[in-house]
Length: 351
Image (cartoon, rainbow, N blue to C red; front, side, top):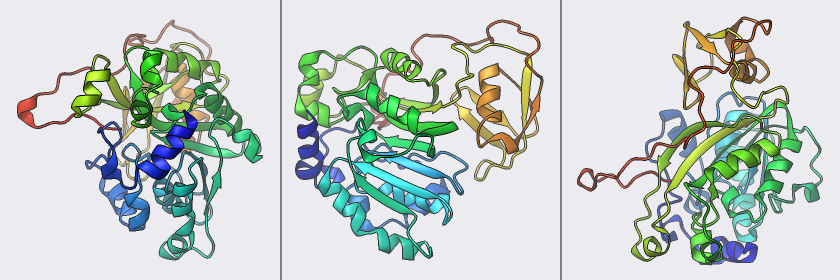
């Protein structure tokens, strides 16, 4: 299957329009600062992009970022603008054709961004075998991935390596495709369905358990949308399964607890994170308004206090008294399942 994926993305697909479904497509509803960064990326790099929208975590200045499955380098070149000349971005991809496009334009983007030397590099390798690239433990602030982990034949190895490579307090921030049930093996073996980011998708609850086994104790869903396939032949094969495009953030904080426990804590957002002057969305359920006392569970408190976000918040409370499970925490399907209104012309979400 790995060779099939390499051929699909290296030889079969020559442009983003060659994709047979909208499981991987660009989200046009992007904030202005993201569109501005994208406009600085070389046209050839953009044309060979097959990912899910754009992975854009906040507070990147000076950080070291690893992009798993970096493809033609589009996301790397966007991130390289945000990390600045003192930060760095490393892209890893197994497809030589894609990697050659990315490497060809390093000097172009270095000059475009006004840097004295490149802050972006690319390596040929497999995201489930990062140990072969001799990357040291605890060496990255952030790891991103854009609709790629579902293509890996060993997703547990990917998660395990990501945890090893992150610094304490670092995070894995990535988008991918998930299913509402386990995909039958017969469909997993279909090279087109796999290459289109569908049949390799994890059942969402299997992903949650996998993340926890890998050390990411409290996975946080940032956003999600239903994927509509819009291809009759593909729909006939796999249309009985619901697929979702979802972005998760997973923190490397060993002290996190398996459940959201209540210690009577709260935070106050200072409004100082760039491009988030009034509200900072930690995840789908935590929209933290500037200046307002915001009650949080112990895990959320640590995600803000023990990470790069610390200086942007005031912290209230301690760990002296435990009040039980934090109200509102559940374990059901985390995604919003809604029917597409054909009359509205809405084609659903994309990854």
